[in-house]
Length: 549
Image 1 (spheres, rainbow, N blue to C red):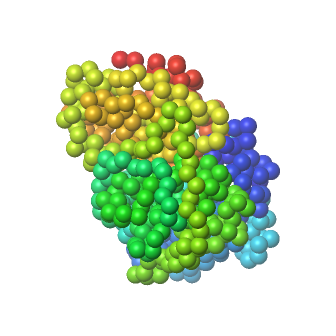
Image 2: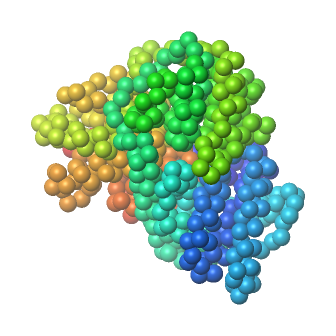
Image 3: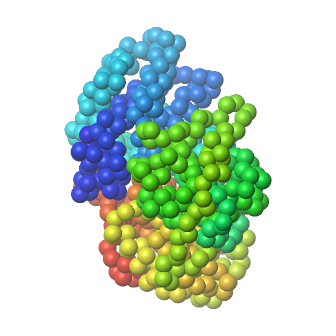
């Protein structure tokens, strides 16, 4: 195997025996085979010239699901991956049957194959993995594009389950996947990467609309981090509809619902907040789940990516659903048309379990979290914020969005938060915030110094706020604002967010804790020269650079 799509790639070069995420060789090969299948399907769709939404919409939704399955820490279940490969092959064959004139043409441009067994799939994965592209720079841009599209697919899948779809997203995924099978010049590949950034921005906007139309605009909210004396269910991942349906089905059952990781922002949405048994937030970011899932004592529902290899301490209490999967773990099936998911098995188990054990805050940490500062809420406070800016009370905003991870070097983000001057405000989204969101960093005229917009896709909020600041402060360029970016990356959603920022014209982005292993020296040079992308150094130097007038 060879994989370097996440920040934990071994020695920042690539995982070759097993993934640092826990992915095994056969799982990795099946993912490579699935990606090859998706590329061939996309090329068939492109060459067919098909325009019917009746034909394209199901294919696009399949691309969302299948690409999502290959994200880091999402689906480790090899049987589910095999099923996706077969579904992709079937869809490609259907295109070929409907357009027989292009099938031979597609066969000439792709390594067409008729694998029908697991062994065929594994052998295919060995042939078409990342290193099958020999040219280093082509491979680098190709993988940068693919990882951005994986992040897009994840966000698009979340929006899709809420009934919100934007045809431009699926059309770009077809275009981008098909492009990886073509001999394109460097400039054209770079243009596709920037187009991917624009589509990532559109996708985040689409998901924002889907979430707020269904659950209302987030509002500034204080969230407890303690536990009660009733049995509980812990929900992790990102899917808000799964949480809503779980809350509906646990009404008046004597069960409390606790959020974990990226489900923290759920407490700020009015339609979720209204459930009194949505009790509190338990634990912190995804990589602590081994200890936190064990101490919770009740059932755990993992709704999307961020699952880590399941431990014996909670193996009989964890369930997956949606895009998440792990061998031997019970999986809650997708919804039937017009019906919610059935969580009765989880509820029955919860009623037999003891209450969760508390996780005491560390020294200097608060027992509550302040959330809900997405764009609608922040813009309602804009007069107060602008007054603080104009009176010199707020000198700089620092966007510290992105992912958390296990590396000790991520202490950097805690250090930055602590070293930022008291006249700076941190704008955050994603699970990187768990490095500092319980620190008591104070307020500025009643404005919290950490404004938490929500999940990683809610980085979109800070672009909305930046454009509004640009308008109000009468600046010609968003880069002239008192605004700096210090982004933590881990997986492919963060790649999509980064590309969205670059496409939006943001420059001087600090990125870390390490630069992506998939960036070749030439591609990195282009990003540095064109966008002034900066690797993080140390907290003191970077704070100085980001807060300079």
